[in-house]
Image (cartoon, each protein chain N blue to C red):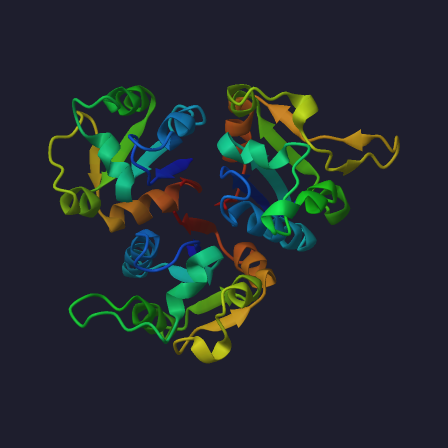
Length: 97
Length: 118
Length: 132
């Protein structure tokens, strides 16, 4: 499964809730405001650190750039839209919005 | 692979429309077919021909229209459109209004569904 | 029917503050009528849409409680609720509206409460998932 998530973890509980439904080997892709969850040293960083213990976490590069985010949690991988489509080829997806 | 995109929120107000468009472009680059794009909820505002954004910004309805010109079925949900005052006369070219049954058909005829919304 | 495509609709928005749940129900009825193997899952604030005793009359909104009561009549029969989301909101099975009645026993039927692991397993079986 590919889980896409587009909400800031500071104003929504989507990420915490989504994590309950992620199985080992599932992939989490952060896009739009969801990419704020990928930043290091925040009060919500532990959520992505937890997700990384089970599976892959990607953050959309274009959304990170747009928001000026560069200091990311170790292990978070960058994705462009081609990578997103590659993940969609491999998995069915659910949008946590 | 055949994809269907479901777009649930309006243009400009939310990034869903932009993310969906960029993803659609990448699907085509990678040689996939897009069976259709279905607009639901406030997503029906995405293809209004009354939209006239500033020249130096993207024109979201025109972008969808251009995608429709590539033989991709661009469908606005009639029930959602009627509620919101979107009619056939208000659509950009290469898009059409039809029922939710079209969404069901797109799902049946696709390998994957991808959802974008607020 | 067994080779029908598996489709899941997830509802995570609260009712009445927006139209999402109302229009999600319209999709459920159409998808079910097309012979797709539909599962519907209420998670997070979505569980609030199933609460008994909702009355939107004073809001001047049509509401959708009657539609929920007709789920099974419209072939929306696989209806699930996330247990943790219910507990987080101090709700239990008794707070959930009926979705129809059992064909043989004629007893009213409520949605089925599942743990998140069971819902995750169900998600993994789906061909398409629609978060509405």
